[in-house]
Structures are given as C-alpha cells and as structure tokens.
Image (cartoon, rainbow, N blue to C red; front, top):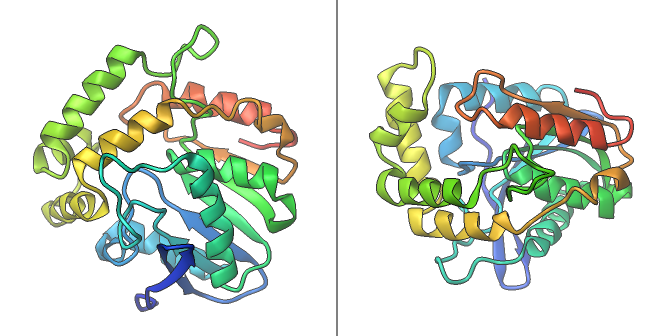
Length: 250
C-alpha cells in the first residue's frame, strides 16, 4: 500500500501552494481536483485514496490544492483571485515537483484552468483528462445547459446553509455509501474551503468562459462525464467541451 506522501509547498510570490508527489515511471501526471480538495485529508477517503494510488502506479503523480483550498493559502470572501492566477499556479507547482511536462487531470471547475494552461503552455502539457468539465458556468442562448442566474442564487444559498454538513452530503450522495465515508466527506468539505469563500469563488467563476480557447488546445485530450451524477446539465456541458477540442476523445 502506498503511504500518504509528504506535503510540500511551492511559492507563487507570497502565495504558498500545497502539493504532494508519489509514484515513479516515465509519465508525469498532475491532478487538480475540483469541488473539494485537501491533499492531506483526501487520503482518508476510501475511493479517492484508491484512485490516487492507482494513478501513482502508472507514473509519477503530483497533486495539489489550488489556491484558496485545502492546505494551500486560503482566501476570504473578499479576495478571490482572477483565474489567470490559478493558471500561473499550475506551472509553479510543476516546477516545484520537478516536472517539465505532465498529463493534467482536472475535475469540475478545475477543468477550466487546465484548459487555459494547456492552450497557453502546450510544451508543458502532454495531455488533458477532464472530468465533468464545463467551458463556462454562465447561461446564454448558446449555453442552455449552464445554470441561470436564479439557479446560481439558489446554489449560493444552499452552500451558505448546508456546506460541510451531513445534510449536504446526504442530498448529493448517490448509491450505497457507508456512514464512515459520509462522515469523512463532510469533514473533507469543511477542510477544503469555507462556505463564504466558496460562494465568492463561484461568483468569480461564473464570469469565466473558455469556449474560445478550446480550439487552441492541441494536446491529446480525454473527456469523462458521470452520467449518474447529481447535475443533469453536466453531460451536455462536457459534450460541448469534447466536441470543440481538436483531436479529442470522449
């Protein structure tokens, strides 16, 4: 069994970014998790730890908490950064991990910054694996699968009231999950970000749109989607991403 790797810090100016490195092999991977992220506590989850160990068996894996999350520097509801700062952080973590070029695996909202990094730095990106990716979170007639402003207001209200509680976990979990795993995930949420900071970051992400960037991604790309997930609009959003990246697979 792979032991939990040491947590280290990369510095982008005055901002510290937590990361870990495990495994070995000819391929480098970078995993950036969306929705929840804490590189220390993630190893206590049954399914997540098995996933990470599996990646580490196929190459050298670096995983990181993006700024504002987990063991990286947190932010308050008043100092959320532009997404360009997150994209710059990817290169900083790769440098700290000693990786010149990596296959980037990103889930949820982290897929946005992975797409931007791959388009801007193809020499450092050997490929993309995107999980439940959205190209934008803002509703328009061209993006009818994105949440409406009213939908976002309801989501923000739900975050402020239930984030990090068993009520949230019970509402979003599907299938049979044991009590220990559910309790862990509630702690994992609280250890990832506060509800105020999450609501603020969510508002910033609504204004991010990478649709124009997708055709500029020229690295091998694979798009996964959870068809049994909670959000019905995820498959359509991910299908848009898959069909607009040249040479992609899905």
